[in-house]
Length: 538
Image (cartoon, rainbow, N blue to C red):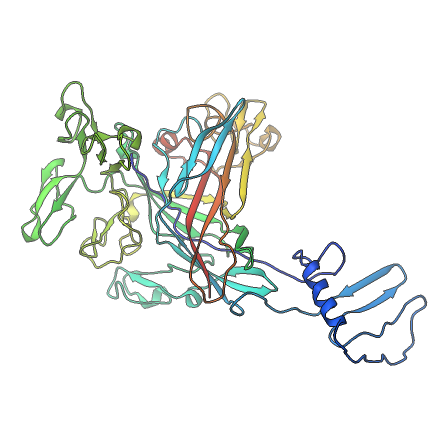
């Protein structure tokens, strides 16, 4: 099948503060570096500065020190040592911002372990995973590339403290819709009749990545495909190191707005001056409207698995074949219907989806296809890596398709992150507990996260703690541990070229309380993402 959801879009890092010098090092673990500096100072003749004689508390001491070094005062019961500020030692000077951009993922960035069955399921780089073992959506969804997020940077030594940027600090904002569509803006007041899209910043209210399509390419599942708009829920915060190129515990909580769109364009124009435009007639798939500029209206819904013929349903195919919403691109089944890339044997072959749950920014005309801004100018927010891309915030989904928002505790790291499921009284292999009725498997609304049944005792009818289905992401086995492994950028230079990095996150997803979506995505349950891309100090 294909993928989508973005989370992903783009990302960053933060935090620092000098502490006491001792054998254990300062708060950034730089004791050896400071010690080397003192050794160097000791080798150079430096005049001493006598300390004036003052009344001294009983038991305290005063030390004569070289200018610019350390002063230590000992008082009964306590010793305090203060280091002078060391400044920033990042190569290239002191950075003020860090920009991170997602790329197209390749290879594996993690795996699942089951009891007695380690590493039984790989987790792809650039992939978004969600749900328990009962998930019905073919995974992973593809995290869009070209998503950029900018953080403010404070530097001490090589330690970086990263904080969120405002729309004005990050720049790059654009009006979507209204009389000032596609022009620069700072606030919504700059966009009469539309909205100012905060594309690059990382404070609360800023967008995170382009719209994320989550197509459901399972047989007959297209109607439950969703478009996700991720907005930062609280100002970003975290830490990094310019010498190692690491990002640690970068806290970027998200509010994920869900739009139950299905497939927005069953028929699309081919050729002419409006390629990709929606030409679906009133009867949906198989019915057409005229394409402007001489184009041809073609099927963008499905292909038969036996011969690749265009189809709207299984009845359009032979008895032995089915109509699927993807088609193999390359390999021995090139052009034939598929659900996942496993249906497309051959080096480099993949299953390319026909489902567009988010409107498309047609990359050859830079025009919105579908949605309320259909026909307006746009800038692609991602590459056309699959049939559900490129999406763009210039081309939002219709608000009428919204089914609510989910809070996602998104934390990014260039290291290795693991999450291990626990066995609770009413359910084994639970990664993300929410209060539920253990008989009906219905969850309390609004959702209440829990660790044990005791956390749910006050909620009559929902006194059990668990997730929808045990495990994570696949029915191949019941997962016990989720492992995602990031990759640091290496030594960074302020103003230097962007360097490759991988940021990873494991998180919990609450129920949407939409029966179709929760059933297909197997929510509530765990989620995981691996964002391959680049990062740059500025």
